Length: 404
Image 1 (cartoon, rainbow, N blue to C red):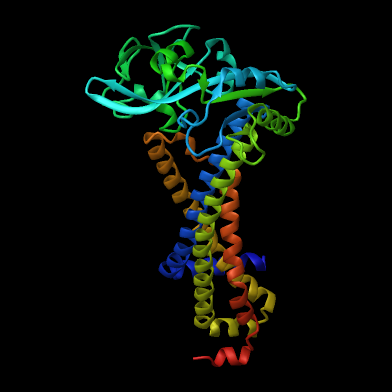
Image 2 (image 1 turned 180 degrees about the vertical axis):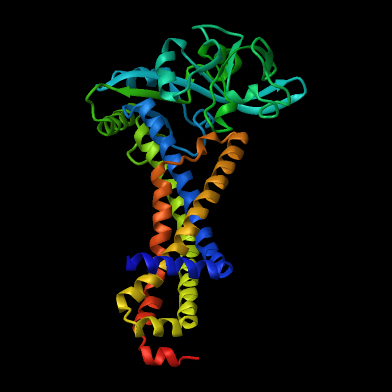
């Protein structure tokens, strides 16, 4: 019963000084809001990577040019049909597909843009779809050997995303001044550069880019079941290096597992999240100092009240509890409001990024995030009140009653 009275007393004091209490909670509100937004986007990115890994599978790997730039854009290196034949026969390789890739000029009406054009053997369609983790959203897939037909990325359907006017099924677009009929659209990937890609059969690509015939940008591979993918990558690298007559360390190609590629992406995004979290941590530290300062002020203002309570028998632990509880409630209020504003900001940011074509960066909001942020704010608030509470509890009743 006594503890209930102490809690009631603390809340009454917060309410009687509501302006100051609100301004104090505002500082922790900003910190919690920042942490909530950053973590929600970080969780969203991790979810995106995990989803791709689950859909594509960690048994995939690929061989491409060792230089900087997109596969197929480096004229000094290409995977030839002979190379693919050799790689596909290495023990441990279960499935393979060569991918043509080059930059083409797209035209529709008065609109122009440059985007990647990919060409592949439609007999490998199922494997390629599995690697790319995308499906046909509208229309149909290309047919083996089909020319004069293309599939487009998602953004071509949306006004002002690729062209000023949306492209529809059956429309024709020019690629390097050659007309192609649109027969399908892939679903949204969530990356603007990927969502304006153009896809055609290998035969159509060879007609459009005759100089690239049998020169592939990269080759995608799938390991046999129970095969160690990393060991297979090392084996392919060694055998292919010898096949091409290249020195170790001077290879014109590299072999990378799909898992390693995702790990690199995750590490980069995690570093960004950590840096932003450290910045948010500064605001949390400032909030802690503000709460501590507010509680020290409260101790000074209530010195006589403390003396009176101790004179009528209040214990030191009870005095400490009142002030720690009070600072904890201030933190709790800041945490709850911070989570609300954090959700609103993260949701708005996610919607804006989706409109800009970056839906891959969509935040997610598990209940654990709400609970952790609110609990964290309450604990930080209570911790900030410990030293002021100790000062209040250690006061002597006689000195406190004489305080002016």
